[in-house]
Image (cartoon, rainbow, N blue to C red; front, side):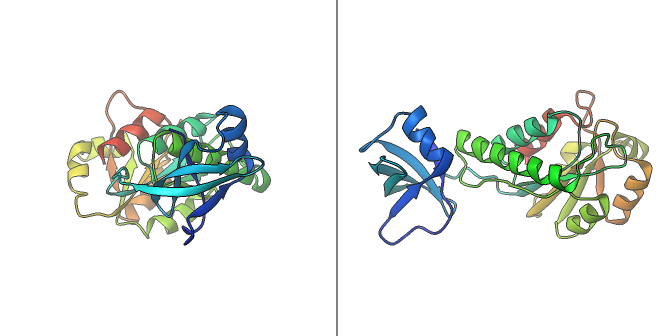
Length: 241
C-alpha cells in the first residue's frame, strides 16, 4: 500500500489533505479515488487513511494507527565528502532505505566537485526529495534530514554534538594495528547519536585526519571490498547499527 508523509500534527477531527505532487501521484498514477486506502505518516506515526475526496487535493480520514517498530535504535548521521557525478543521490537513497537519520554533505580537501550557494541549495532540495521517496518506499516513519553543505570546519563543529564520531580511514586504522570495525560497533552500545564520516573518492587528507583526531574521532577500515565514496560501505554501516 502506498505511503505518504504529511507535515503537522494529527488534527482532532482526523481529517487531513494531501496536495501537490503526491496528490497527482495518487489520482493520476495510482488512479485511486473515494473509498480507497493509503497509509499516511504524521508525527512519526503511520495511519491507515481512507480517501473521502479526490477532486483536486486528496482529502482523507485517518482510521486506525498502524503499529510498527521500523526505525533504527541509534541516531546515525552520515557525513559524506562531495563525490563526483550523481553518486550522492544513490548514497542518500540506499542509506535512507537502511535507516539513516540525516545526511551532511561536506567539502573535503580532495573533493573535485564544488557547489556554490545556489547550486548547493538546489542539490539539497533534490536530495531531500530522494530521501522522502526512499522513506516512503521502505515504509519508514521518519524522513532523514538532508543538511546544507558544510565546510570541513563546520562539520567539526557539528560533530561535537554527537556521542561518537567514526571515520573511514584505512591508513590510520592500519597504523594502530587495524581497528576492527565490528569491535568499534560493539563499543557503541551506550551511544545514542553517531556520526559517520567518509571522504570523497580520494579519501580524507592528512590535515583533516589530524583535526578529526583532536575531535576524538575513532578511525576504522571498512575492509578490502569497500572504497571511499562507495555507497555500499555506507549502507553496510547503517544496516549493522
